[in-house]
Length: 93
Image 1 (cartoon, rainbow, N blue to C red):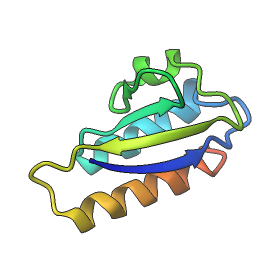
Image 2 (image 1 turned 180 degrees about the vertical axis):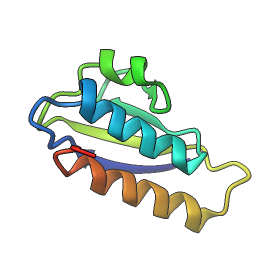
Image 3 (image 1 turned 90 degrees about the vertical axis):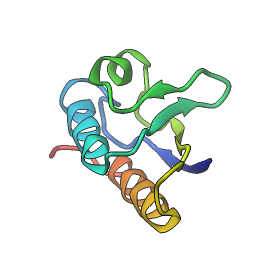
Image 4 (image 1 turned 30 degrees about the vertical axis):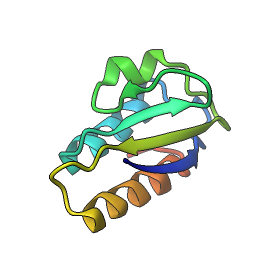
């Protein structure tokens, strides 16, 4: 299991357009990425509806995770780093 922490920086959090930009980037990785706030259940980051309804607000710290099974470790780490960096932007796409 590979994980990476990030902070959501989009002013409206992961709702509507910012969520769509993020989910599109997740789906481009072809990895089974999950997203969670501390102490809460993870959601499938490939699902726009799951991400939008999970209440990831501006400034909230999240954890990205990938099981990594069958994927090269460097590819998984690079994807998580890229997604974490994306969460640190305004996600305007």
